[in-house]
Image (cartoon, rainbow, N blue to C red; front, side, top):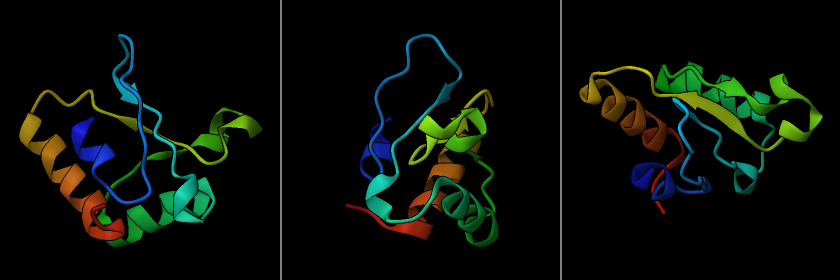
Length: 87
């Protein structure tokens, strides 16, 4: 959570018991689909556009963290930050 919230244009609340987060990316100025595609192409990180969960999901992406290896989670976060930058 701390790492996501330290990333430029991303704001995320602490989930309550889930294995995924749903951060807001509205400040980045792109659709959730555009952001998801950019992350995949440039950072090799796969996230789900918020619109996959309905039109109210626009401006959000779903990021799963079910991976038990925290090093892999940190690598993914580093890749996200490398694509959009730090605050």
